[in-house]
Length: 88
Image (cartoon, rainbow, N blue to C red; front, side, top):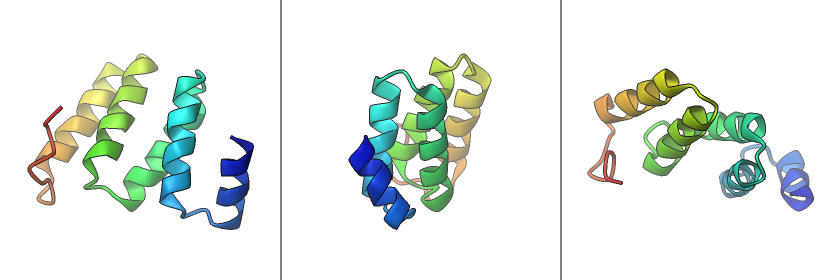
């Protein structure tokens, strides 16, 4: 995690590092940290299916089922939604 923090300190827009950090944070139980990272990714890449699904997953893990469903609804309604959106 420290290496990812250092990489993001040098380049906050380094999406692969932010993605790995979000997943690691979620795995270690740091839901707030995972949420912050994945929300950043979704703002930068709103049509990315994996980021949207992970954001919904983290919100549901936090007990925010309505927020999770809202994320999925927005992703499905997006004109940029490709064939992978909604497939699980």
